[in-house]
Image 1 (cartoon, rainbow, N blue to C red):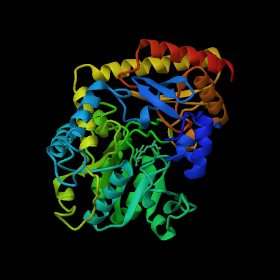
Image 2: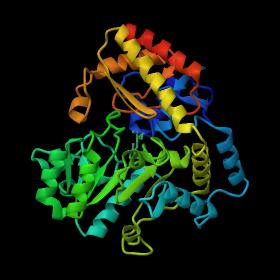
Image 3: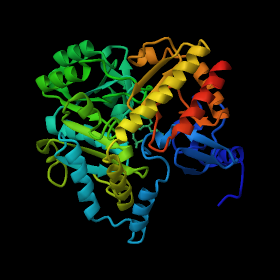
Length: 428
Ligand code: KE4
């Protein structure tokens, strides 16, 4: 254990050992400038850094911690597992219970497989769609992120709605060409691609409410349109609900918007902050997954007892009456506080919110897709971010991420957030 260093000293040491000093790029603060603080501990809605500062946290581990940090009931559930050993590589009763709970909450999921990350689950869902349909092309949307699988790190090629090109070094061009990337909310674009290439399209994958360009809700009719188009062309509709699953309501976005996808990708909340992912869908599709069928996917720690216990306890807490109404009210309070502060300072912003996930874009707006999201003034967001940090509030260190409320955010936190916003907006 390295001794009691400051965040800056830890960061200097981390950069000697870890690419960019972080184990996931967004944590390096490159989207907002400055250097990341290093966390010592967390509790409820608060993070405490190694320098003795504390922050009201709206990153919440990027979504999983809908109950807040270190809730006692989850800690007790984890302790019970620790006392029995915590990894076996063999089936456990908890995995059956979590599969049952997911299938009960998501009627479109008849069979579900757990993984250790959302990336794995999204990659597996694509492979299942390709194996089931015997087709190779997929469609995704600009600004949607589905983990770092090769087929999904692809952006629209010069040919617009035809062949994709890699969005990362190391992604084979031949593979990228199989991914068509369209603007989110562009149903006409989806219709023309599916009408032209329908017989070749294995799947359309979408974040039903986007979190990864900042929060962008679907236009009325967009998701239903994708459902109708994919059904008509024999392509599978995949909802990536890694963020929205159990966030927007217990049944996620598919319950909120009344759309039954063919496959669903889950993560984050179902692990309560421990490594997890899941993919599942109709029995006839998932029955082709090994060892039942010829589509292979595996994982040493899939269904890990600690992640399963934390997930089950988190979901149990979310079944208590009034939970989502509380989250909605608190998120609305944060939205109003931010908007009032921006208005008082005459700073143009667009605030997109669905349930307890929200993003304050520094642009006149509206923000409905990647093109309108990237028009945001990221320098102004960065200044706002640091102003909020000074005020003891930790927002996502990128304009293109979501802020998340938890059940641990109380009235004092909301009032302090509004006060920090008034002060920060005044400096812009
Ligand atoms: P993971 O492999 O990071 O568990 O999940 C990938 C993933 C898949 N689908 C959606 C909709 C996601 O949002 C994610 C991961 N989300 C990002 C934040 N937007 C994780 C944070 C990070 O990359 O450090």
